[in-house]
Amino acid sequence: MPPEAVIRTEQARHQRGHFNLIHHETGYKADIYLIGADPLHAWALPLRRRLRWSADLELMVAPPEYVVRRKLEFFREGGSAKHPLDFRSIQETTGLDEATMVPWLARMNLADLWQEIKAGRS
Image (cartoon, helix red, strand yellow):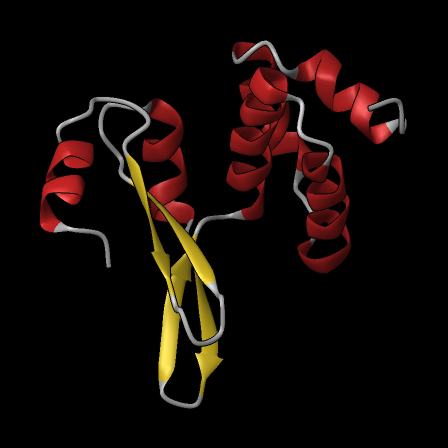
């Protein structure tokens, strides 16, 4: 768990507030994004999915369409080669409702980038 001061600082952000939870024994990492005033977060919150992690643990996770949209933003900013692999993995594992993505991708100016990735050009 990050120090309380870090969490409070991130909570105060109107956009892009986040922190990580890392399980040191296994290396599992969870990215925690705070809703703030971000309309994409507000869209995703009621669409979160319940995931059974183990017999005694359930988690609420973001819909895959949200994850792809947010990762597209990070990819546009930083160009990490891992993001296109993540997109393909998400598509294969959970599938994507691309119809819900189209308006957001247009609004976020990510539609062309998404088409390039789908075509294997990025």
